[in-house]
Length: 502
Image 1: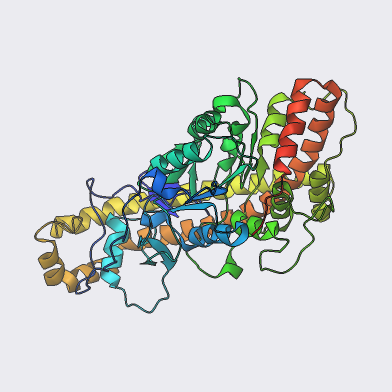
Image 2: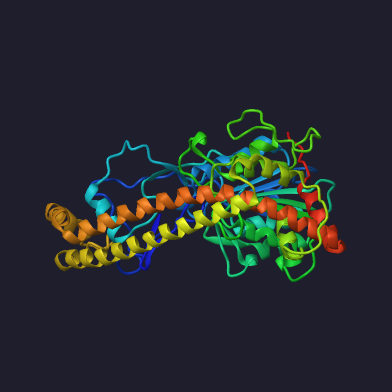
């Protein structure tokens, strides 16, 4: 949960927890606890290889490409690493290409702190004031993955270009995991890769357009539904339908997603990737056998695994697909002639979430939850404004007596903190402005927790409402027929492809 100069930013799950705007001039970082040595990580053991060195050896074609992690260690939560590690476990390592964070030996995997280390309370107070940021209460370790290269945009696009340059009998599976960012248009939606390099939907679409090989794309980030533009050539919804590719995404273009958790306990996680990858092998999130094969053909398709997430996840995800995107772009409106359609995956969602009521009841409940969330958002904004106002007074009082406390890189900072430690702590303890600052933070965090719960309730309702809507829109598109209906059927067939498990 982040603060900015203009108030609280609403951040949950896989939304990037970017460093907050500094309270002091640009470049300020958090103070180093007095007497504590900085953590030392092993340096990466490999540099970024050439594309040829990344690809499978010999005549083995690249069967899958899995890439992701955070754009910096602060965003590189252990659950992302765990999900990427599941890909070779499910699909088999042979013919796979794994790109993760800063590459082999990278030390930037964020894991929730165990609470064993003693923190410097005063340094923590100053850090909250002058350099608030996420990930401070976390530890970092070296990755355990068998990584082929760093997950930079250049590496990902180069590997995709090479892997799709020739036609293959088997489609390429592309799995991208990490943090997402919305764009001004859906095509500008991006997943943030290592080195703070965003991979946009339009760039991914253009890269896949260039090669003849088919591809099946799975993206688990926030706002990943923006990658639904892969349904169109060049990621341009005003253009032609793309051929030979489809995608499945953790969330709509407007919503955050679950799944970026520094807690390594898989039982506490609800991310799309954990549910989806286990579902491909017929298992629930916890590894127990589950009824996932909707059509009864003895195999689990990508769309069936995706459907499992929609009915089983307790997270905030509202998963979507390229066929969803095409349908909502090309189907007639919610009025008009309709015919019966067979969409077993949508019917499975409607049946599984039936306890939420029929479509009318679900829409009514969703509207109420959204109204409640809007009220909570208002309280978050109020808390943010109160916190910023209190901060300005606290900062002014502190800097009037200790002018370098907002700059831990200043040559006088360490001596100032050491000499004035007791007086600074006493000042904060007796300051009404600091008390107001701390109270506003507590209020904002409580409202954030309430908002997250509301997002979880709204997610299940929205999944059900969208299932009803999809059936209705598909019936109208089928009634009209023509090329748009045939493209929708082709996208469904693509999404219903079942990968070979190893």
